[in-house]
Amino acid sequence: MARILVVEDEAMLLMLASIVLEDHGYEVLGAANGRKGLELARREKVDVIVTDFMMPEMDGIAMLSALREEGHAAPAIVTTAIPKNQLPHKSEELFELYMPKPYNEEILARSIGEMLERGLPVAENGRHV
Image (cartoon, rainbow, N blue to C red):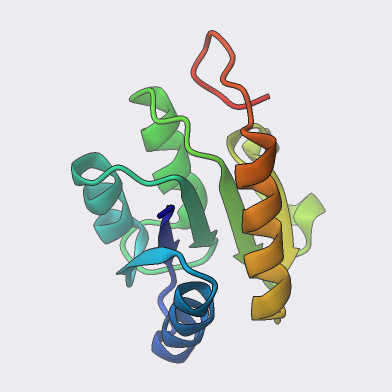
């Protein structure tokens, strides 16, 4: 069973995403901010990371950056109401999919399934290609 880390500071969105992903057969680990997400990803093996961008304590891009620097290569989906072209410079290198909010949880589940099916080979630098 694939493990999905969902990092979202809006409790209802975290709960809804978790329910839908669990219904699709995934094990879901949830975190309410980037710092907690970072701690979970360091402690637990996760197959895909779904993270909000704007959160208290540590945003999703900073969390992904720290994980990539440590060699974590799980593919990531960034969800945010911020337009993609307004995300921090070079942040696109940290994630495989941008999903604007509000997003459909069924599309999220399908996107995760497609990522897992592709297997996303890991490059020498630990980043999926």
